[in-house]
Image (cartoon, rainbow, N blue to C red; front, top):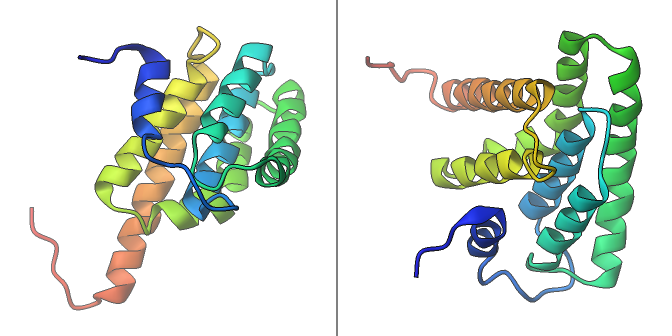
Length: 168
């Protein structure tokens, strides 16, 4: 059976992720960044919060306690960006989003495989579309975040392998 739609894709994304008592770092930072991305357009709707909770519940390590920790952490960053969306120009807001995601998400994403990074960005895009609208600011934030991850990954590889030569 072929799965279609955001929920089906998220179900597939989180398939088999049950157990433990604490979110894995990658899931925690991905979910936190997803709520931040939902906030940059100036509104986090009930449907976005419901989907955030649903996606979190499917992660390995989900429990009431682990969700409370995730929610508190994500809420601080998302609330900051929600308010900043009222006062900052587009480019400043994009930069603020990337700065907020850098310490956690970017640091974790550069260590993942290319497949895991691609899956994470697909999830973020789907979360941005969860309210039925993929706004220009959400798109700009996601593109800037992808570019930042790519750049940091290249710098990391260059630092580890200083004598490597790039071909192509």
